[in-house]
Structure formats: structure tokens, C-alpha cells
Length: 469
Image 1 (cartoon, rainbow, N blue to C red):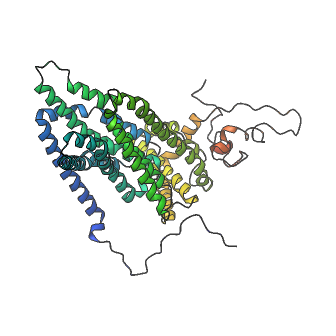
Image 2 (image 1 turned 180 degrees about the vertical axis):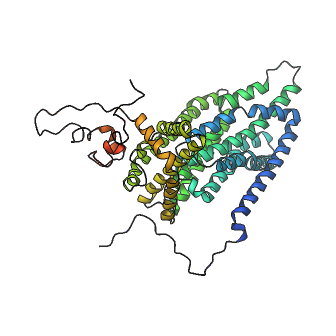
């Protein structure tokens, strides 16, 4: 009986002499030039609009204060992406899109909608309320989601799961909030300058406290919901069109709803803002943060489960799946390479870790029938990249595996001859649970992924953790 492979079939090779030429608008250079031009023009227009509303002095004050949370937020999202770090160009695009294109779309569309509603209803106050609670969430979240959609469509290799969606969406929203904070803080400074002699409290300080100290995560939280939807859609094969469309739309609708609740909190009475902040925003932020960290830990477990197959085939050494599944071991391997051979070797080890992680994710998708048609080609490319960098990476990861491996304690002796040992049914050193099935080895914990395969005797190191007394 014939069996079908879970891996996709590669596309057909063009016939001899057949050349598939892309249209001029499909060339990478043309797309990149058009995107840079669009973002640059959007930046110039948004700069002119914000400066016109705040004045030069207000713009500079707003710019300085709005910059405060940006490095912290970007560093947080970059930390979350350390397991399989995406290229910096994706993050730069996301931030630039949020700060320039999305902000411009929001300012123009919100202003037009509010003026139209005010003219139609002859009630400016109701127009402002409706604009803040309905129009702004729809326009702003749609504009920010466009960046996630573009990365999802055109940088598909860099978009493999929930963490990638969270990072791209969060950085896009950080850029959007940066421009919005310049506008709000600049206008607050202008208000303080006009009411300098009235003895009123500083509007700038109050705005800074609410937007930068209390809720710098507000816009990232909204858009991260959209990113989670795209990240879940990335798990499904291309032929599952319904799920790949419904999941991002669901995330976008949730983002709009949470955004509308946050903007409408002032309508709920004197303490409406603090009520929504304490009972909804903070728990939501904690829940999304937990989900992102849990997903990152799941990625590390996935690496340990998938890479032993390549170690058995000889592409990796036995200690590598364990070391690559530990952030501490990864960092120690880079430090060891830098100390032993220099910074260039440390960069090579970092590249090796990134390619190995991509290989593990690719195999995970392929075993579930969710990889693209270029699975075999992509797998071979990643394996060749690893092979080229194996020189400094293998000894560095072997050292990191030895240094971070858990301590194996002696197992109890059998009470009688022939009685099985505790653990996985093998006498020491094969029965240590630390290197059994939990780390990707085949049950019941023996070779090739059991204790000897991870190489303590092979690498000349006794079964002892040097970081523990």
C-alpha cells in the first residue's frame, strides 16, 4: 500500500531553455526602492503636520520625551525574539511603518471622519467621542496591521510563529505610539506655555505620566493581538485558506475592541480610566506577556525535540540539541568563542545558532505537513549554512553543553541480582532522567541521545557541573 509523505513536493523544474522572467514590479530592488520612498515621503509629511500643530519648540520637547520608552520597548521585543532572531531590516521597517505611514493614515483619516461626523450631526462633542471610541480604533489598528501583513506575505521565511507576530506587531505599535506621543506631549507643552501665569498644574507632566509612565504598553498591547492572529495563521499550510484568513481578522477585531475600550474609559465616569486600567489593561498585559514567554519556552523545547534527528544523521554533534535548546548555553557558547578565537568567531556561533533554530522549526512544520513547497530546498540550504560554520560552533556548543548540563546523581543499587534499576530501566549511566526522553532522546533514554551520546566521557569532562559546588 502506498504511503504519502508529510513533506510537500518540490515545484517542477523549468524545462531546458525555459526562462521565467519576473515583471519589473516584481523585482526585489524595485520593491525595496518603492517602500523606502513611501516611508520617506510619509515621514516628511507627518513631520510637517506635527510641527505645524505643536510649533518648533513643542515638537522638540515632545520628541525628547517621546523617545524615553522606545529603547525599552524595542529591547523587550528583541529579547523575546532571541530564540530565532529575525533580521533587523524587518524591525526597522516595522518601526518606520508605524511611526510614518500608519501615523499619517491615522491623522488624515481620523481628522476627516471627525469633521464629517461633526458636520452631519452638528454636534462636535459627540463627533469627538465617536471618533475616539469607534473611528480611531478601526483606522489605527488597520493601519498598524498593514505592516504585519506585509511581513507575513513578503518575508514569509522570517515569519514562522506567534513570537514573530508579536515582535513585528509590537515594534510597529511602538513606532506609532512614538509619533503619537510627540503630538500629545508637544501640544501639552504649548498649553503649559499659554497658561504659564494661571497657576495650573503642568499638563506636560500629567501627559507624560499617563502616556509614558503608566501605559507605554497600550498601543503595543492592542496590535500584539493582531500579531498573535497572524502568528497562529503561520502554523497552517498554505492550502488552509479559511484559517489563514479568519485568524488574523479575529486578532484585528480583538485589537480594535480593546483599543475602543481603552479610549472610551474616560466616558465611564470620573474613575473610569483607572478602573479600566486596573481591572482590564494590567491583567491583559500580564496575560499577553505570559503567553509570549511561554511560547518562547515552547520553541526551546521544540529545538531539543527536532534537532536530534540531524545529530543522528551526522549533521550535528550529539551535545548540540541540548545546548541549542538552552538560552544560557547559547550565550555561554558565544562567550567561549569570543574568548577563545575572537569576536568574529562569536558572530559565527550566533549565526550557527540562528540557522539551527530555523532548521528545527522547518522540520517541525514539515512533519506536520505545514511547510511550503520549497521544504527540501530550504532544508538543504540551512544544513549547508551549518556545515560551513561548524568549525568554531561545535567546540563552543560542546563546552556550553558540558558547563550547563544538570548534575547526575548516583542511582540506587538494585536490591537483588537481575532487579531493574530505577529511572528508565537501564543501569547507570544510561538511565539518568536528565538526558532521557524529556530532552528529545528516544525512550528509554539510551543511545544515541542518552547520557553517553551527550558526550561527557567523549569530550573528556567528568559528570560534574562546574558552576555548582
